[in-house]
Image (cartoon, one colour):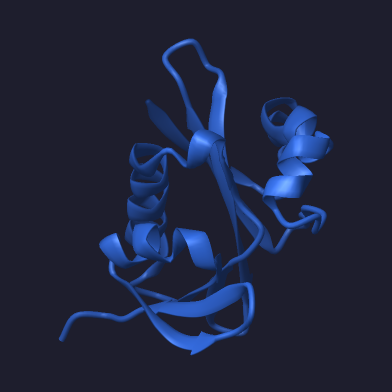
Length: 133
């Protein structure tokens, strides 16, 4: 598996995730919220050895925060989640406050990567990755 980081308006992004973000099953996975991108976003995409897209997590940078919201990982594969989240933490945790709007069923995956719940909603939890020290 390879994790690549793309800017929010990179043409390769559309090739790698465009077919997924318009798929009814993927939208249902995201609780029917559409995926968005702009120059404020950085996308982390997990690719198989055959360059198939296994999942993606967009991160929006705004006002000193790096916020994860509206992501997709095929079959909720813990290995893919783990690799994507580790890469995101590596890129952003030093210079940004790292937050996530996490679907309740994925809370354990995020906790394994150093995130903690700071607020519960009905279908989501707001989580933060706290800096060590």
